[in-house]
Image 1 (cartoon, helix red, strand yellow):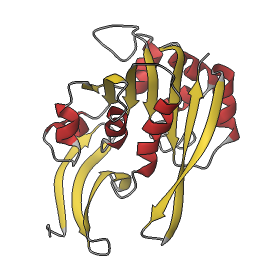
Image 2 (cartoon, one colour):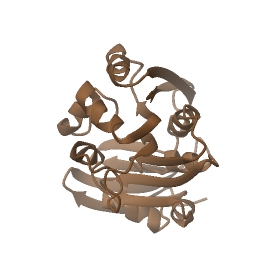
Image 3 (tube, rainbow, N blue to C red):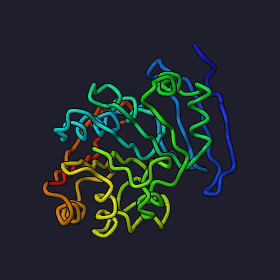
Image 4 (cartoon, rainbow, N blue to C red):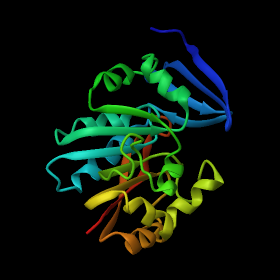
Amino acid sequence: MSARFEELDWRETPIGLISLRRRWDRSLGREVHEIKLDDEFLMSDLFTVAEVELARLGLAASSAAELDVVVGGLGLGYTAHAALEDPRVRSLHVVESLSEVIEWHRRALLPLGAELTADSRTRLVHGDFFAMVDSGAGFDVERPRRRFHAVLLDIDHSPRHVLDPSHAGFYEVEGLRRLASQLHPGGVFALWSDDPPQEEVTAALDEVFATARSHVVTFDNPYTGGRSGNTVYTAVLE
């Protein structure tokens, strides 16, 4: 058994104090890794089902034989790791605004870090996902305006509960159109949300994409003893 609680790293950032901790949960009999921003929990590897389904549902919506994929938000790495399990993926750009999170993976402080960084298809990109969309130059700094087959996004808690007010415009029609311009025909945008399905989100996606769906992903919650859920939206261009 590991130490009951260990703070692996913490840093002051422009958006607050970010910290990585590992603790032993006696009720579950396992280690838990968590990332906090100030006093708010950003993510925990207790709840990763929907992050994995973000990749699986998003890539399943693509009919392309080979896939160049962008993941917005590295976090604990579960979406990126699930994307790499699709044999069609030939390249994976993971955009993360916090260099500290990238460093934690490269130092293998997180369970999936060593595997992610060792995969030759993976490129960890330090950058602002939303600024990259707005710039029009795209997600590959070496190949400006490069198009991708799928973009999988898990940064904000939801389109209506954003980490920074500057993100809000992305989820409106014009922001989604800028994102769609960086996809190949038939390209897929998939979005994780902590909120139940919202009609206004699906309506905005319908304005830009040929098809849009919301998927409720449920999972066991060991703390409540019941089931919890997240939403994954998938939208496909013509």
